[in-house]
Amino acid sequence: MVYHELEPIYDTNSKILILGSMPSITSRKEKFYYAHPANRFWHVFEILYQTKLDTIPAKKEFLYNHHIALWDVIYSCNIKNSSDSTIKDVTYNDIPSLLAKTKIEKIYCLGRKAYDLYEKNIFHKTNIHATYLPSTSPLNASLSLEDLVRKYAIVLDNK
Image: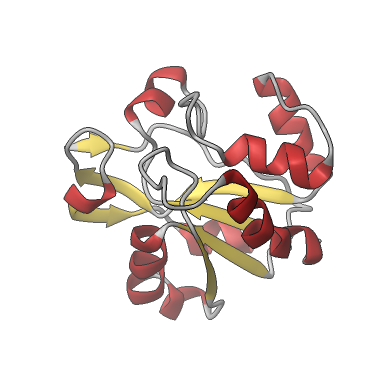
């Protein structure tokens, strides 16, 4: 069983919540979201917002300045390596409690697994449907960086 050990990143002014499924092995080791060097999450936001996000403090400041909260759907699960397709025996993070502390009105789920788990198991507690966005994982090589930037522009539009 793997447990989610990263705290959500948010403040009371957060308006957008971005949810992944479960932190990768690298993210758990580095103790920060999307830490694998081949994951394109931070690079997508660097392009969209025309900024440099090369340190953890810079990434946190970016999230706070743009009222973006970051967390994951899963609290614990059985998973092989970092592959969403192997996830089973899931327990969920308390997303409704996070929403109660913020101004979040829009939720984006990164990857099909996060989206499906949220919509099936959490939506009925929040009454906020999530918007699906493709995973930025290096395992999702079917989309180019340019494709991801185009799809993620919706986050910029919902500031």
